[in-house]
Image 1: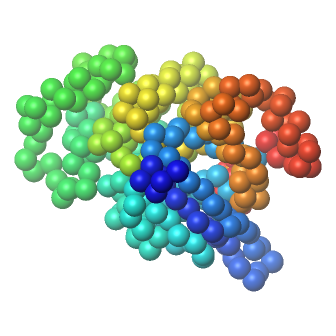
Image 2: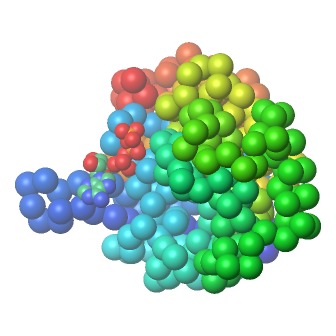
Amino acid sequence: MTNQEAMLTMSHVSKTFYPGSPNQVNALQDVNLTVRKGDFITLVGGNGAGKSTLLNAISGNFLPDTGDIIVNGQDVTFLKEDKRAPYISRVFQDPKMGTAPRMTVQENLSLAYRRGQKRTLRFGTSHEEKVFFKEELKKLGLGLENRMGAEIGLLSGGQRQAIALLMATMKRPDILLLDEHTAALDPKTAKLVLELTNQQVIDNNLTSIMITHNLQDAIQYGNRMLVLHHGQIMKDYDEEMKKSLTPEKIFAELQELSIQDMLV
Ligand SMILES: Nc1ncnc2c1ncn2[C@@H]1O[C@H](COP(=O)(O)OP(=O)(O)OP(=O)(O)O)[C@@H](O)[C@H]1O
């Protein structure tokens, strides 16, 4: 693979919390990862495996102790989170985290649309923007195009998460990080938001990493799947391997590594 095809490269990235203390946690251990443009990666692992920490390292939530992080050819290793925000979008588990509850759907979308520009609503929303937002909302298939004036706080968790997803993808980020973004939703709504996610990612050829605790979803969605354990990438399944994967096969393979209970 040439470097041009890589959207994200992590080389020898490590992060230890509380170093030298009895509470020391080696949250990421010498992680090496190259993500190609358009890769849709699902990321699984047991509690405390380091999944969110990996996404935090990419989004710039902290500086790694060692290693380099390159996004779309730019070394972002020492770039703070707000400076990475124009390139990296994230949707969190809690629908409340991605949207401003007291603002309307339209105002939230306006803010997301102007990401990277000065944050202001001083100039209102232009007619072109309104038409664009309506079109984008329509694609979600939830009727939200008729609720552009509604406060986000009045919408359901699923509706909010769908809008958070739209806000995160509208400006076509270099990398989309999905941090268990359907875990707080009921099964039917979770499926719907997952399908919307899949559609957004494929339609816009977005490079994405999605954390999930649902192995079936991890196998079904995306073209690559990583298994993390103790801050290390233990398995990296490509598209071909993924086609014949089942949860049972994964457990059997992890059993060989004596870490079969890690996904429970
Ligand atoms: N900011 C922090 N300060 C101290 N310890 C942290 C911090 N962030 C993560 N950790 C620790 O690093 C380890 C990995 O945590 P992380 O949240 O990445 O796991 P995870 O795989 O996302 O787990 P889960 O599925 O339970 O959310 C855990 O032991 C956690 O307590």
